[in-house]
Amino acid sequence: MKASKLILEGIKKALTTGEATVSFRKEDKKSKENANLDEASAITGSGLNVGGKTYFDEAFAALRYANPFRIGSRQILAPSNSAVQFVAKTGNATNSTSGNNPWGYTFTPNNGSPDIATNIWQLPTRVISAQLPIRTAVLTDVNYLEEAIVQDLFLEFSQLEAASMALNNDQAGSTTITTGATDGLRGLGVYSTSTTTASYGTSGTSMTDGIHTILYEAYSSTTPTYDNLVNTLNKLPAQYWYMEGTAWHMHPALIAQLRKIHDTAGLPILLEVGDGDGGAAVHIFGIPVIPNPYLSAPASGALSGVLANWPQFYTIADAEQWTLKRFDQTQPGFITLYAEERLASSIRNPFAGVFIYGA
Image (cartoon, rainbow, N blue to C red; front, side, top):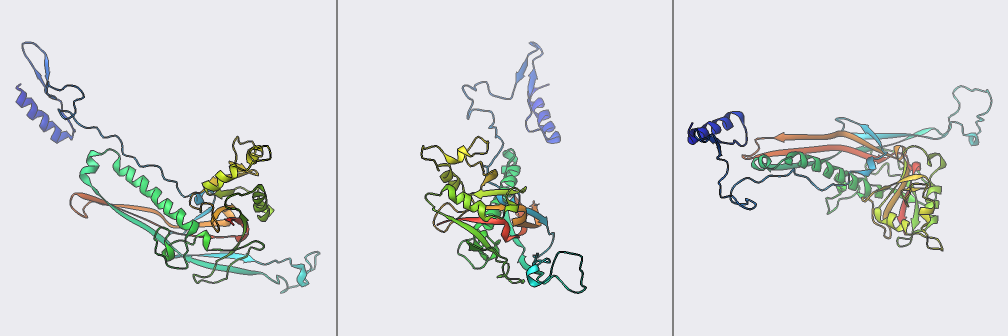
């Protein structure tokens, strides 16, 4: 068979089977040798620009830090809901100070529960969305590009969640859109603080309700001390100390400062009491430490850390966990990815956490 016919047969095979490349060989009847028609015989050296193809390695994106607030926090599903209402029971049924004796068998109908009540607050569902057009020709050439884009987009959403949960002010508009402002989540920095008493915010369904008061410990933003850590733990009620889900969230710069705390001999204190973990500030007082770069770096007035029992302290309500749609014909030569996430979040129990602020 002539070489030209072999090439035509190869092209036909490529069109019908979808093979990306076809190798053509000519059999010489006299020598019984095969002649490879793939490349020119003049290829020398690397072959760059004189034949052959470029191989595309799998596409990737640098790793982003997914939302650390989801580590341990209470997560619930609230599908297709436009708002989430939180209800807390308050008061004491056994309040002996009001004259009701909780001891003994005496029972009086229609009497008791002198200060039982509920505290409610309601937050609207927020939405994060993105659309991304991609040239179909690029998707054909580059391996794993669409998957890499989707994975990175998911982590982008997770970053936006975390930044909004940490510091966004949902009470006022802002010139920045990085955390959402009045379209974003209620950030930890919005909540009131006290050095003596934690409490629930006002009860109701307006946007100013549910802003609780959280205990806090102030530390020198340049030289935090070992006593600051002791005081922070002491402000968290003892019932939460070693429950499952109790953890320190700290900005990495604060962790670095704590690792520098040393005794009079120059030895790092946290390593000496490092709970057998082999490293300073991996655990503090037996409680795990989670690096959280979405909190503020140490500075005056900066919220740089939180010690909490996260299942009790914080709730994330996913109204729509993650939606990804692909549109193939929005414009010629492109596909368009549309992604969306809907959620709400709130401090649930103001007594189950302590803030760490730079002084």
